[in-house]
Length: 383
Image (cartoon, one colour):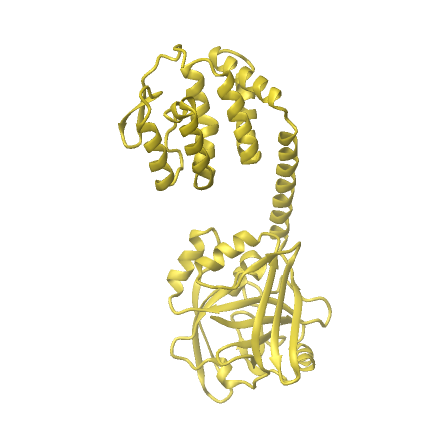
């Protein structure tokens, strides 16, 4: 469940002015955070959801680790979204689930503050400064037995929608799914955050950019350049004719026949690049060309252990139907599949490949166990 939204201001009073102007209700003082060098004000936007305005507290010394969000000051007097919090009871489990998909939420630490009325609030949370993916992925919080801040602050309405954007939405969504959150991130050139709140005045959208750190901007730039490079390579592969694929396959097989051929390594790298950057339709075109020009069992093994294993190991859930169709229509293709090993295939895909292999009378590789092949040919026999 969404616990709260965090908006950063250069000055707390001015930040509250802006929120009051938009929502019609002024956030009330929440408390001070000596360990973070900040203070906040809060406003309820649901029975168990609130909006937090946070700013540097000029009366607090700067903590050793710096002021929270101090590296992301908003421009001028503008209050801007900086991150959000997801409430969960099992912080350790959810923290580990996010780490399993490559998103680090920071250490889990306890926190507390005493309200002006003497009420002690205690919580546990992952450190907000971790800012995974620029803050698009939330930090985690658990209030335990403490009263929820939303129940002790004036209501501005109810949060009815949250929209997020990031240049790498797939990674962000993988983390959110692992964390048990159904919020989804859309693709955008920058980090973006929009919250729609139903107020007494009608729906209000609080929209802003989430600034990415220098490291995140660098990562996004690298990913974009990599994506553009793959698209450029894919366009080149699409332009290759079938005759050129046949020529490449012949040269590839010829180089493997001659162990000291200086072109062997370069040709092998070209095939590997094709495997990782060409569409599956193009990869099948190469398989067709290579199967046509293969002259020995060694050539078939080479094709099976390279492009075929890559297709099935990477795209097997989609391409296994095509493999079964080809095997049923072409005995030579069925025999080609007997040269493959599991190589990353799912249990279902591997079982279906093994079913095809079991029907071939003269397999390229004999099976000594469920996943352990051994060669049965000398490499010079005509298939």
